[in-house]
Structure formats: structure tokens, C-alpha cells
Image (tube, rainbow, N blue to C red; front, side, top):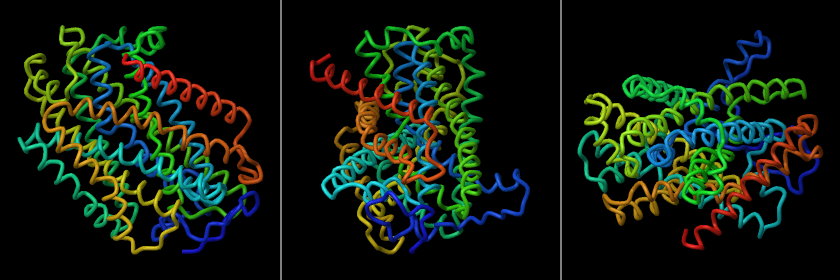
Length: 446
């Protein structure tokens, strides 16, 4: 599908295809309606993005961090969420201003070797994402139904067919399923919060940063894992693609309004994700850290202890159901991100079902192999490691995005304000610095 780009200047090449071509502009926007009704049409993409901020990788890092350090890493959860709001607003800005997703923008701007390198980094990030989602969902199926881990991984790998079936009925139906699952997850976490009765004073103090975050290598490692699990590279590609399922505005004023609506949708959805992530960490801190079980690192171990520590059989069931819901939601959005990355970087023309199957298999095969080899032991360590890998890959998506949205020749009237550019630069420097220190600590054997 060929589309007319809102901006034509500033790019080295012009993208011939639309992102997610069969769904591009499929959600109509009636400009004659009042603003609040126009906003309703933009509700959806932010929640698909928010799914990536509460996937099984978040569970592993948050459970680990809460059990070992109590409420201390809540500040990292909050910081990661604020970074996510900023970076996702950049992704939406790029899409609405230029008509390009992040993968297309990289291909249209950079040389072939640079584009190839960025594509490989994006694919590596998606593989790491799927590793967390497949293993996490398989663990949830094992906890709830007693399925062997290998069988759970194979069943989870078939979720691409669910995606194909849902998209046949329209993108809004897909968004509706994701939002419904998120609501069920939130309800389950709320019940668990009532059961654990956290120390809310301690919770509030946990949102205040401590110097131990830098001094303690183990705390830094988990902090990077939380950042990697929260601010995920594939989400930047995903958001810049799915926001284009809405019919684009024709004028600068219409596109500016579209951006405000998209950012509002994202901010609300990510606040929802912040509640889920904080709840997981609080659950671990209150249930394990303060009860002398700070060594809990495995999701299965945490599930087994909940019943005895809380004196309730409801909490473990809700725990497993929430994990499965997060995993199913995340695999749907990761499949979409894989399609956007492959189409955008490689400009491959394939039937929709074949594109999704290929992009899914590229990520799922390594994830299944690692999961089978790991067996029932060490799965939480694999989940945490996958999130650290995502943190290390983040700059390769974040830096190009920051360059694009700061360039007036590419963004036109929707170029990012100077204060947002400054914040984006600060976030980039901070994350790259943390990555370098983490790499040094790991190489030093700490």
C-alpha cells in the first residue's frame, strides 16, 4: 500500500509502503465530532504499548527486586515509567509527523550497513522479548494446570494464530481483547494487594531513590533489568506502527491534535501499567522480603510460598492467572512489533499471514530452544537476563528516535520542543551510562 507522507523533506529516501499496510488508516476519525468523541477513536494503541510494560519479564525482575531489596526499587519502577511516557510520545510523534514507523525511518535515513546493524539489534531485542513472554506464560500454565514446561512453551508458540483470527475482525477487536485482559489482570492484582496488606508508609519511601542503587552491583543489575523490562526497544517500533491505524490528519493542526490524543491515551495506559508493576514488587516485598524469604528468585517458588505465607489459596491462583494474562497479551504485541520491524527495515512484500508467521518464528524458535534446554530450573534467571539484554539494546532504538524527532526538516511543525529534546538526551545519557557500568560489573564477575 502506497501512502502520501505528511512531510517530504529531510529524508534521504522515501518509503513506498505504509506500516501494517492492511490495517493502515483502518480506524476512521470523524473530524466533525466534538473533541472528546474524537479522542475516543484514539483509545487503544497506548494499551497495546502498555502491555509490553507488564509482561512476564517484569514479573521476574520485580519479584526478584522486591524479595531481595524490599520496596527500595519502587523508585526505579517509577523512573522507568516516566521514561516510557517520554519515549513513547516520541514514537507517536515520529509516526504522526512523518507517516513512518521507526524501522522505516531508519531505513530511509541511514546507510545500508547502519540500517542492517540496527535491524539486527531490533531482531535481537524481539527475541529477548519473546524469550521472556514464552517462558513466563509457560510457567503460568504449569502453575495453574500442571502442564510440563516444554508443552506450555509449545502451546504459547501457537498464539500467532490467535492474532491472525482477531485481526480478521478488525484492529479495534484486537485492542478490545488486550484491554479486557488488562482489566482482569488489574483486578487480580488489586485483590492480592488487599491480601498482603502492605506497609504504605514504606511503599511511599520506596519511591525515593537511594545511593545504594549505584554502589550495590546486584541492585544495579536488577535496576537495569527493571528498566529493560519496562522501557522495551520493541515498544518504540510497535507504537510508531500501530498509531498509524488511525486515519492521519491532513493539516498541521489536525496532526497536532492527533498527537495530543495519542499521548493522552499512552499516559493513561502507562499509568495503569505502573500500578501493575508496582503491585508485583510490593507483593514480593511484603510476602517474602519482610518474612525472611528474601532469597526467593524463582516465579514457581514465589507461587508455592504465597499460600502458606498468606493463609489463602486464592492468592496463588490469581498470581498464576495474572501471569498467563500478561504473557498472552505480550505475545500478541510482540508479534505485531516483529512484523513492523521486518517490513520497515527490509521492505519485504509478503501476504499478511506469511509475514506474521515468519516474524513470529524468527523470535519464537530461539525462545523455545532456550526454554527447553533450561528445563524447570533457572527460568527466573533467564527472564531477568532477557530483560538486561533489552536494557542493553535500548540505545540502538532510542538514539535514532531522538535524532529524528529533534530534526525540524523531518518533523516539520511537530518537531519535539527543546525541553523534550533535552529530557530525551538526559535519559539517553543516563541509560547508556548505566549500560556501560553494568557491562563492566558483569565482565568483572561481580
